[in-house]
Structures are given as C-alpha cells and as structure tokens.
Length: 630
Image 1 (cartoon, helix red, strand yellow):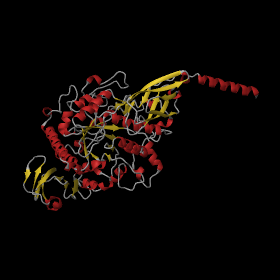
Image 2: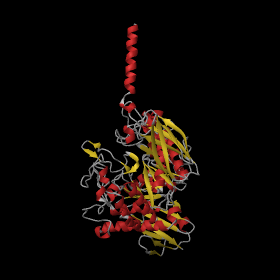
Image 3: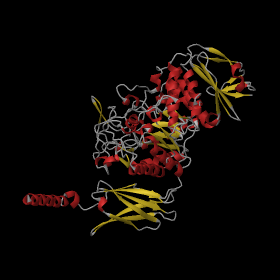
Image 4: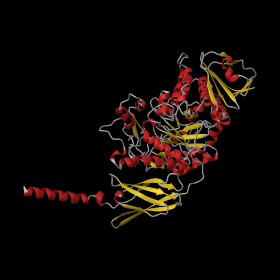
C-alpha cells in the first residue's frame, strides 16, 4: 500500500512538472492585439475596457502611467492569452500615446496606445423623414480600383464577376465615383451593407455551391475595414466625400453573430463568449415568444441563443466582456468614420437588455444619432415591441426606429391582391391606422425591397404602372424612405436559386460592362422614365417639409382607390391612387375636411395645373401627387 502511494505521488509530481514545462506555459508573453485600437479624449463616458490579446498576455501584471488615465482593474479570464483592462479617462487627459506596461518576472512589455483628439467632422447627425436612404452592397455597385479586388494573403483569394457566388470587386472608390449620380437622384444618405473584415473561407450555402462573404455579414476582425473595399483609409475618404456633399453615412451593425473564422472565435477568451449548446441548435426565428404573455422560456432561449447557421457563432451578450466589446466598437466606429446612423442587423435575435444598453450608450454620446433595427415581423404589435412604443409590454425598448417590414408587406399586398374588405390597398390603410402603437412612427424606415427580398419589380409582375404606384406611396407617406440600389433602373430578380439573383452588379459599375446605366445614354426609354420619376418625387420630398413632417390624414379606401393628405401650416399635398384596372373619376366631396378652401392644384410629376378639384380623373393603376392651391 505504501509503495502504491509513493508511485502515485511520483506520477503526479512528474505530470505537474511536465505541465509547467509545456509550450503554452513556457512561451514568453506577447501582446499581439489591443481592442479598441485607439480611443479619444473628451468622450462623455470616461470608462473604457481594453481587450489585450497575445500568447500568455493574461499572465502579465499591467500598469499605465499617463496623466488623466487610471488603470482601475486588470481582469484575468479562462484563456491565459487574454486580459481585460478597465480604464477611466479624465476630462483633463490630453491627446497622446500612452504606454501599456506588462510585466512578468524579469520581462517587461510596453505596448503603445493612442488617445486621439476628437475632430470637428459631422458625426451622429441622424437620419430623419427628410432623408432618402440608398442601400448599397459595395461589392456589387461599382469597382473603382481593380487593384484591391483580391489578395493572396486572405482566406478567400478569388474575385470573378461571372460567378454570382464570388466577390466581384466593388469598393469605396466605385461609390465615390458615383456620388454625384446619387445626389442628383435625390439621395441624402447611404447605407452600406457591412464593410468590416470578412476574411473567411468560402462557406457552404447550398448543396452545390460555396459562397464568398461578399455581403459583409460574417465579421472576422471588428477593428479592420475590408481591404478589398479600400480599408480604413478608403472608408474615411468615403465619409468625407459624403459629408462634403451634405450627405450622410449609415453603418450596418451585426451584434448577433460572427464568422467561425473570426480570430476571437478560433481562440475564445472564455467558453461562454458564444452561446453554447450540447449539439448544434438553430434559432426558431419566432419573435412572438419575446412578447407572448403565454410564451415558454425555452422558446425565448432558442430564438435568442440559437445560431443562424453552423458557421455563424452566436455571441453571448449576457457576458459583460462581450457586451463591452460590442458597445465600444459601435462608439469607436461612429467616432472613427463620422457615422450618422446605424442600421442594426438581426435585431430581434439579440439579448434585449444588451440592446437597450448599447442603444443608450450611442445616444448618450451622440444625442441626434438614429438607430433602426431589422426585425422581420408581420404585425404592428410585434414590430412595436422592438422600438419605443405605447404598448404595455413588460420590456420597454429604447430603440428609436426600425425597418418597417409591416408596411413593406402591406405595399406588396396592395399591389398584388384584389381589392376587397381586408385586402388590396386596404392593407396600407389598416397598417397605418395602427401607428399609435409606436412612440414616433415617423422614425420607422420604409422600403419596397432590400438585399434579402425578391426584387420589387419582379414581385409586382414587371408592371411599370404598379412600379410607379409603389414608388409614389414610399416617397409620400410617413417615415424615412430607403431605396435599394438599381431599383431606379428597373433591376429585377427573385431569390431563386439564391440571394445572388437579387444582388447583381449595377450595369456600368465594372470594367468590361457593355452598358452604363449610370448615364442616361446607357439606359432605355423605360429606364430613363423610371429614373426621372424617382428623381422628381425624391427631390420634391427633399425640398418640401410637408412630405417629411407634415401630418398624415388618410381616408378609408373605396373601390380600389386610396386617398391621403400630407399637410402642415404652409402646404397641403393630396395623394390619390387608383389600384383598379379601370379608369375612374374621383368625386372629392368626401375629402372636404382636407380640401376646403382649395380651388386648384399642381401635379408634382408633370408640373401641370388642375383648374378644378371637384372631380379628378384617375387612370387605371395610377397615382396623382397634387399640391393644393387656394
């Protein structure tokens, strides 16, 4: 018995000794990354948490000696390659480079960290109903610099415009080259699908295809802008070019997930950095469980913690280090790139308390910034849950706006359904009639299509009359209108066999394109008519506050007609639409409460005058936008 005990003790001693000599322990500590990569003096929130990463970086004892900066606490976590440093930056701190000093035994590591002075460039301006947002997928819009299309040191080294699933080479320079085109169209703000590094392998997106991360939603390094778009310098140049033209920049946030090629997923700080399941579990995508008074807790968990796909790890925002990392990155990006607003991807899948905290941090630092999330829902109550609302939900969201999927669905129904008691254009009326559930429905972002939907023109059967009807509603009703690139030149496509069919290149944006539809000469007559139609309405909206902040008064649709007014103390605009297949003559006596005192009108689209308003002729599938005059 004594011999057996001796042998066991000897064995444990040897194992302990070998463990102490293992490469991981023996390796000298190094600092390879500090996130954020820099910060600023003069921020409203004095607190900052630095993520320090490198071999055995967590074994160092840290100190900082810089006037106005205090190291409050250094945190060690499960993975010895990480440390998290809590700092406070006093209002008296000056811009400069401080030294993060780490010591272990006789070894000392000094890591520089820059505190910048805040510049005077516009940032956090927000977008409002006075804006017209244009959504661009940078890889598919225009290639201004072919030299950055692909790089041999990235995991995906391919670019081929002939392959719909690979990168095509669009970039910031290509966008800058066409800003005058966009401004002339009436655009006031650009929303780009994410531009953060997607340095990842091709992902299996179907039984017979591998797809590149050209869309941008698979982050691999939050503090790098993808160099295939032009990198950090190119993004700064784009922001500057926009602001010089009086235009704004909206960034696309992804808080919910990352690529499985992300550097901090490959070497996680701790096991609960992401949401872990015994076996792969996907989200239910059913948001009803969040506000259902009868809902099961298990359903909420699967919605929130389930993964989108096996290659998109779901971040655990209840982990305070994850939450701090994401919030600080949002503030860093806003300051670094002079952002004016954020569109928040997959909003409904994120931890609710985290979202409110992140929104508050951004709004505290930038009081006029606008935030609008993507929650694909199909009823006003469900949509209201995710924004500031008037409903008695136990959870109170502080998000000011959202993408208005409910009105998007109503637009489609109005154009595709036969008019009846609850169908056709009644759908728009019904949706807007429930606007009282929102604290401010004018902060909702409206749209006809986006990068995840079938193309608008294909949804409505390639019917140009219907096209003009929907465009008219979008640009004259309440909310902040957004547009998807190419809709103005009648780009078509359905998500069959994949999303790539609705993400085609803008013709004229790429070397070798046979047509240049950025120019009138490269477009056919119908395309030029569409561009002119959009430009006319978007310009009128931009120049007339009545279509931005004027009150909306709508009348119950009858026989396929839908009439509403936008009005303020200075102007009244009447929008009269006929969704039927037959011309009608509209008797306006029913609208007397809004038309009393007006004797004539100007047709906004044609600049012609209506000398009488008693009866108005409405051709089949048409809408009139009339500025009423006394």
